[in-house]
Every structure is written in structure tokens, then in C-alpha cells.
Length: 195
Image (cartoon, rainbow, N blue to C red; front, side, top):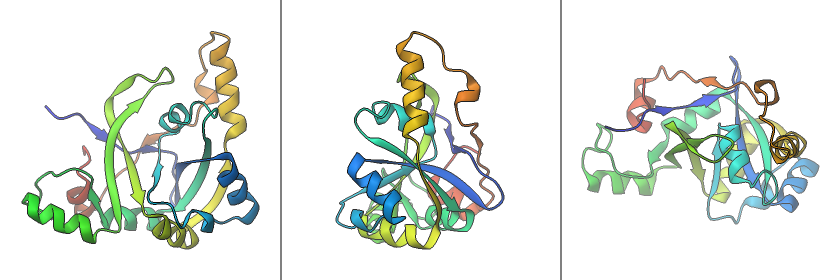
């Protein structure tokens, strides 16, 4: 049986929060310039709505910085609609593997499902979404749709310090992420979340 797939995020009627892992130099420049033009030569840029997944993968800020991006709701849904799954799964958009390969070549974004993580790095019982861009596409997308950029280093380091003292992290120290509803049948067909 396939694992449940969920988009869990901070969101409101206007925007959704996602996270981007950057080197310290890239993150500092993004904050300084309020822009990601310096990522245009990156082969692939990934964003994901899961704060804990991002925090763990960043090495709790020891390897990478966690950047919070608030993306306009319309832009996030547009990206989902124009994405293609990273691995083949038959659906009405691409019923055969050949159709999927053609779609992958044309798609603007890559949708990938990975196990969400707890703070110990253990896989949870469901998969969370990641969205991949070419660097050039991400720069254009960010210019059009990102409404806020924030360096989450302070919050990530607090969590690292708490865990380092053998203490559990309180829920109020973590963002409250909830299931993000997908009402569009087109998007549901493309990315195949568990509805």
C-alpha cells in the first residue's frame, strides 16, 4: 500500500509558507538584496512546506541556513498545476511512462514526495511535498510570487540548543502546520496527494 501524501504548511487565505535551504552566503545575500537572482545558475532549487524536514536536512543550521519564504497562494497553486511528478505514476495527464517522460521535459516544476521527518530524523507515517525548480526559473518565480523572506537561523539554533541539552522541544517552539487543502482536480491529478 502506498504511503499517505500530505501538504502540511502554515497558510492563510493569501499565502503559504515554504522553506529553502541555502549556504550562509546565499542566505545573507537574499536578505540583503531581497532577491534570489544569485541562484540563477543553480541546476536545481527545492522548496518545501515542512519546517522540521528542512531543519533536520539543514543539520539544524550547522550545514545550511533555513530560509522562510511566504508565497502568494495563487503562485503556489500555479506551480503545483504546472509541475510533474519526479517519478512515474500513471494518471490521466501521463498514462504511460513515455507520456510522463515527455511531460517531464515540458514541466516547469518537479513535484517530489519524501518521508516527512521528526526532530530525531526518523521518517513519519506520511510523505511531504517538495517542489523543484531550475535556478533560472526559481529566480523568475520568486520575483513574481514571493511576498516575504526571513532567515530562520535563530529559531533553528534554539531547537538545536534544546535538543543538545536532552530536552524535548515544546510544540509552541515549532510552527503550527496544518493540512493544506487541494480543491483543484487538475492539481490533484498532477501531484496525486492523499485527499
